[in-house]
Image (tube, rainbow, N blue to C red; front, top):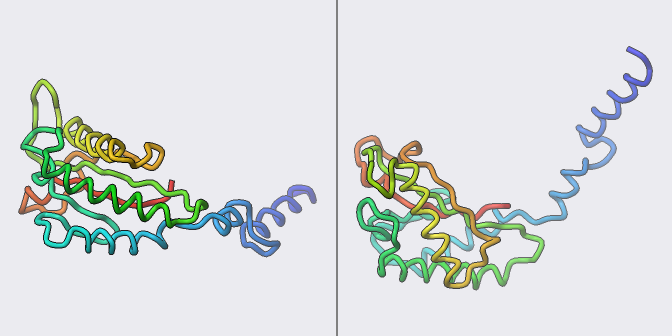
Length: 181
């Protein structure tokens, strides 16, 4: 190994270990605030605002809404009762985001989940399309009531992230997660 290669290796190890100070990603992480600090407070506000709502709960770092609250079976159109619930979520999110520092680069990830029962119709040839359409419908509704598009993400998991192997209904859900962009 020549001395230039050795010098480059020593420099790389020194920087990686933080001996010579933080690396660029570490320095960036120190200046930008992490949304995880705000997630618990946001979910606490949601819990209070939605107290008494059936089929709505906080599980770990996610806010879980059973699909039946938002959609008819096999459909991805948000029902009026679901709109009321999502309007509360949007209101809390808008109010809370106004209090977050501008340096917090957050998004609300909306995740669509289905059960393992196959769907195959002209609108949704598989559970992938149904779970995607549901996540997108929630994102579009949240945007329509004031949540900026740049703060929303739609994700689809189909039947591949089940909560229960016994109770299929628990697997049909929308999950909301406040996370970094």
